Length: 194
Image (cartoon, rainbow, N blue to C red; front, side):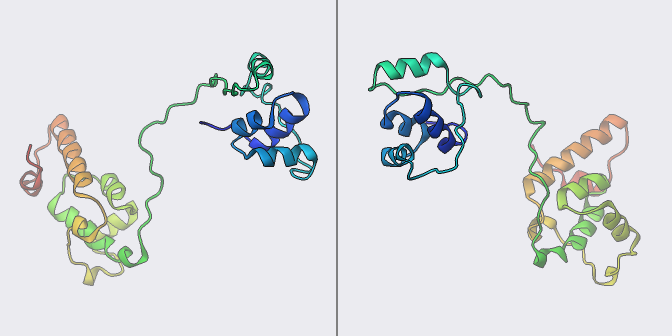
């Protein structure tokens, strides 16, 4: 059962302003009845200001009155009236790469540049969690470690998943077809089979 916001403060308010039983308040607030009794006795939650669950839309006066009349009934949270905004997609946030794998990113970039030239710099950045500046330096061979960069598959390095790589390649190929560009040979061979 979902709990109200700030359960202890809600319990304090219910104790002070209603004639509900300790069991009803405890079940509604997700507490033990003895803890609610300790709050009522002044042994616990000293200094906590009560939070009115009616004012913030978690309960109604009718619900409280119904439970006051019947000690065996239980309080029910009021349905949410606030419309939550919808997310704009699967946002995972920033991608963390362990320190041991960070040195492998230039190798993965070199692999993608060589074998999947249809991928844009932004797609490579999104896929590997790198910057456009790093992609450009690997492409121009001006990276500080360019003498030691060996193109290696980023999937095998653990920098991305095969599913994500195939999805990015399909998106890039679709974009190239829409724009009427010819697809590079390496990309058409490595494209996933349907």
